[in-house]
Amino acid sequence: MSYLTPYTVIFYIFAAITVLSAAFVVFTRNVIYSAFALLFTFFGVAALYVFLSADFIAVTQVVVYVGGILVLLLFGVMFTNSIMNAKPKSDVLHIIPGTLLLLAMIGALLYTFYTTHSWMPSETMLQGSIVERIGFETMSRYVLPFEMASILLLAALIGAAFLARFDKPANHE
Amino acid sequence: MEQLATIGLNHYLTISAILLCLGLFAVMTRKNAIVILMGVELILNAANINFLAFSKYNGSMQGVMFSLFVIVLAAAEAAIALAIVINIFKIFKSVDVSSIDSLKE
Image 1 (cartoon, chains in turn cyan, orange):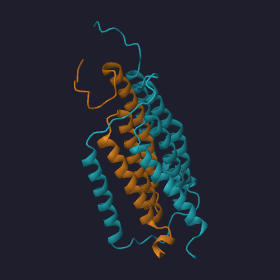
Image 2: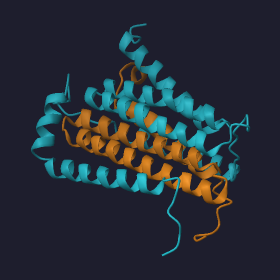
Image 3: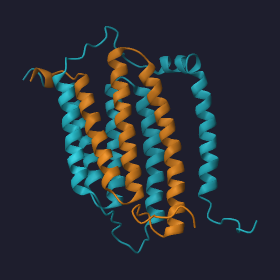
Image 4: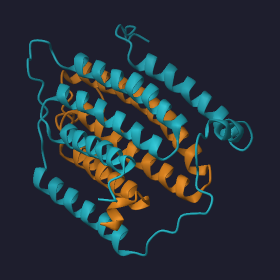
């Protein structure tokens, strides 16, 4: 049993959490259950980011996805389902073409990955913490996209607040 | 078993492919707009795993920086999409995307 190192075991546990909870998100009919299963998917993906030595991205994933997007989605679920409706269901359509596409795409992608030549990793793989390097890259090579992201976020903030107002002004021009 | 023992690029690509296909399945088959948004988030996460995996095994920072910007865009997209969904709910009294059939009130 030389191949069962703790590293490998933990990786497989997180991979299983990610994939199974993502499948639960997709296959359950209850919207609330989907939202809570998405929590585990995001945490599992964050753990995989740690395995990929992208610790800063993992923390960002937890803060932005779990703290922001998931809460937003839960608010959306609560806004758009009446409390009286005890089981907020989500109906399905195109179930057979959808399943066929799911299986065909997974099959095709995995077939391609596993039958082509094995990947040759670089000699200088990313190791350890990359927070410092992210700081340098952000302030040197990616400073323009960084500033543009701030403008985009401001525009999205204003737009979302404008769109979601509850008392619209009357329509008389 | 040797391939299973050492965690390589193919493991991450496999997880990413499965997440991508599940997200696509949600987008295709669901009627509830919020579950469709969850599918889009799954797809974006799958793309991010790919970026970071290739970045690690390539030893460059480009994938890492790109995944950071993907997260920023995902946050903006989720906020706008939720605002639109809430507006749709106000007008149509449902978030069933197959019953939304008019562009103008």
